[in-house]
Image (cartoon, rainbow over all chains, first blue to last red; front, top):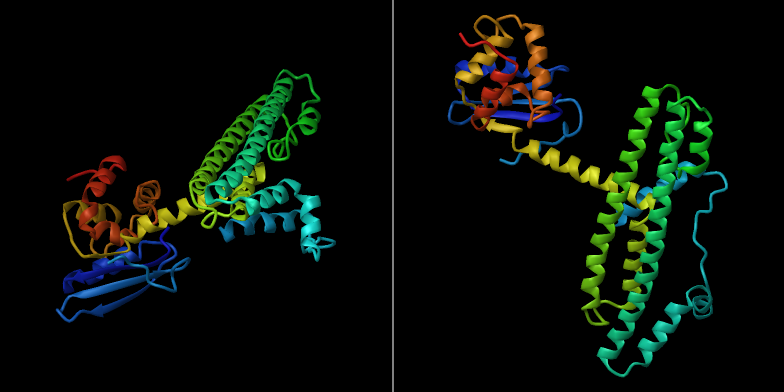
Amino acid sequence: MPTGVFQITDIPEDKVETVIADFQLESPQPQVERTRQSNGLWTVTATFPGPGSEAKRFTG
Amino acid sequence: MRSVWIWPVLSLWAITGCAGLTQFPVTSVKYQEDLKVKDPDYDAAVTVIGKASTDEARVQARNDEIDRRLRVIDLNFDAFVEALAKENVRANFGIALAQVGLGAAGSLVGETASQILSAASGGLAGAQQAYGKAILYDQAFSALLAQMMASRKAVLVKIYEGRAATIGDYPLSTAVQDIGAYYFAGTLPGAVVATSADAKVKNDQAEDKLAKFRSNPFTEDESAILIRKFVRPPDGKPTDTVNQENLKRLHQWLGTSPVAGIAIANFLSNKELRSLREQAIREIPIPRP
């Protein structure tokens, strides 16, 4: 079960809903936020309950 | 290092309860007199070091004291392990009695096994359960002994490095502290503490391993599409209804995979995980069209 923050970047417009639906396959479901990048692609960020949910911990 | 000592203190507090617990070590106002009484060897070594006329002689005096203490600790440790092994053997013997129905095994175990090894000794009933407990004893003893050996070796390396240092870089007081850590590493509480610390390190490493899969650029290949169709038949579209049974099987596979804890969305869209997705398709298995 995922905990904390997960993110997918560079998503084409027509795949945003697919990515969100993929994140919603988890239980409990995360809070999902979508933001448009300057290049027109999208970033979807999912915050799951549990450790790390208050801070992003990405290596990239 | 500080955190290593916190756990035994907390454990002690938890075991004894806070009522009546002595909260501070004894302090002193006569350090020289107390030292002569409480650690005469240390006092003598300090005197020898203080009177030595060369750095080489001071280092030699310090190292002599280190060697004396290490040797005594090692001798006591060997005897301790030997006694512990005998306790373990007797614990298993008690369980064997229970297996053949001679009874009284519980009390035998309770009398002889050390506190940790006898933790599971209560309520022996039936050969199956007794067998399980025998395995538990063996595993607990072996694991704790291995931990003691490893921890002692780790501290010993530090002490040997110190032996080669000057008296200024590695004074006798520091050496004695390290020797205290060496002693503690060879105790059951020390092994439990080290095991807990080791578990935390492994947990942190596992978390770090997952960290690089928390964010990735979106990619899509045939393996991802096939898994989406499996979970949301027939086309894997966001509007298709989730097949809960298939989703459960995917969750179960992911839970035992090298990327356990990853979000399905990241698992499906990460370019680096293609071979792992192919593995999931084979092992779940997910039928190909």
